[in-house]
Length: 307
Image (cartoon, rainbow, N blue to C red; front, side, top):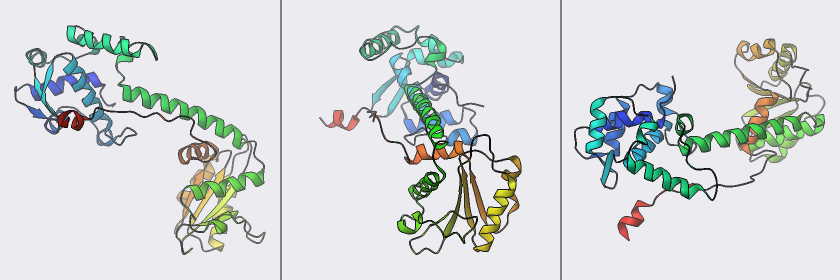
């Protein structure tokens, strides 16, 4: 299943409003949620702002319904169905973006939107596939595409690091994740040669009571880390009476190696391959920097009500 498109929320919203009474957003939200089949995961899926994705699409559905004249907004946060909206709700037929363009007020809104966008880009799309995306969805998709490209770049640079440089990067990386933040010297210190199988230690608490042991391997893409190496690391953890270990590589792990964390008891063993490492580096700002900041603004209703 997938979360319905924004225009697929119009009919259930109109059905909630069909009684002709004034409804708050909370009332509409509750009513629509009872009419739309969403999985538990879809109900809690969020956009970057923290708002539920399905609810964001419902809000866009109400915005487009308002511009099509299907609903009115008699006061802040209050919605009421119009005569046109009641007719549409009574039919009970799924609403599409194309159907909205049959309403003159919506066409006028679309034309205004298109004129506003002429200076910075193409006008509002009219095909059904493009119209299925809310601006929020489009922004999310563009950001995801940029991040995928950046992850690929980071991954390619990892392969060209020397083994020593890679180990230094790993220590910086785990500190950036929040490990050993109050014990920076220890977090970046290399262990002695006697500590075979261990490349570093970081602390999860300021007192150094909870330690995480590291193993870092800079391998070529074709040279996968096998189960023998991971089991060796697991054995090294036992020698140090450690309960937590992270094995990081620029390549990937064999199927046998991936079984090891499931086999061990009384300790947690995390395996991070090159692809996942690159993703986490981008997520936590390691080896990357902000190029552009985009501020998304919204209407300040308090301003207009109190002016």
